[in-house]
Image 1 (cartoon, rainbow, N blue to C red):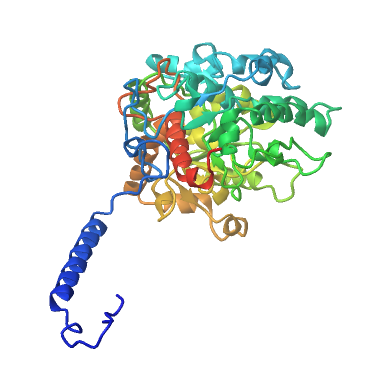
Image 2 (image 1 turned 45 degrees about the vertical axis):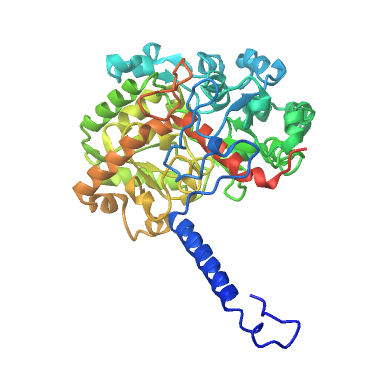
Length: 485
């Protein structure tokens, strides 16, 4: 506070007691008000042009965003989502080419039923599942994410047909199909793998809603791992979509993310379980929780004989050493597990733990097959889960130990420990708690086949609900970075 300086030397003027007392009382009142607000600490509302009542505060990873009601009476945590109506060349036309998208086999059966695949009733899964749950299972492809997410968002309760009302914008481009059809073509060039992606960006950059935020409030689902879109030279693997100008600000929902790129968000691989309602989920949870599990651990994978020191071969050796009573192994060579996922599910449903090394990249669909089967995953690389799926799996503060086991792969290679030794040493009460935690997490790891806009209902969120909530929170957090134009 500035000192009081009288204009003349008057002793009475140098002692303004009533003024001082009033000022002290004023500042004391201000201090009390400040401390009272500090004690309450309401969560700060993100900067937005929307009214404060319509914004959602940041929430923990495993919590649902607080609900509000939009103009249609639907419960939407942080706003509404607009789904672009793209030219058919960027999605529907690619689906019509399903028999030509992969050189090894036709993708048409796997892209049927809006990306869910053929119903389990006509596959090998039918002999494994309870009759009342057959309608919730499909022969789904691990790369069908783009089609599945678009289908769900088109009927989502938080979708709006008016872009002026939207908080987030979804771009339903099937980039994985567009790039994937050229990955194994013998004469395909880098330009071939980039052509559709470049055309999409040219179209998107002309849209007023993209220009307004330069992409900060836009998101896209990618059905292949991030590395398939990060080609560094013309003769290298994959496309260069994620390195193209104009993509840097767009959030990418991808089955394997780049841990060094914050705009990549890891989302679950699609599994075969697509429940239509909360009752289906709870019935499945009861089924896997009660199922007998005679084996301590299981492993499904194909060894890579051409790789020196192949870790998968090491794990198969660990399984053989433990004996058939303790470990079940499934050799997935020559696509055996892709063609018959029932073999994988049956194996995991008979074990308490399932081994999850890295695949051809750091992640595998098998991680999610394992957890949906009610088994506890055993990890050897932190990038296989802990640094991938922060919106879906509890991580940090040792929460990983609630639902998984981590084994130091170098100690395993050196022979300083064995898989059986580590797992057998875990007390049975703790194993039971871990399995309960995994079963509890199942709804968030699967993509519902719900026909209506309310998703699973019954207070359960599937992977798409988590995705929408997470994206709307992200938009609110990022809005201060861009200024609408």
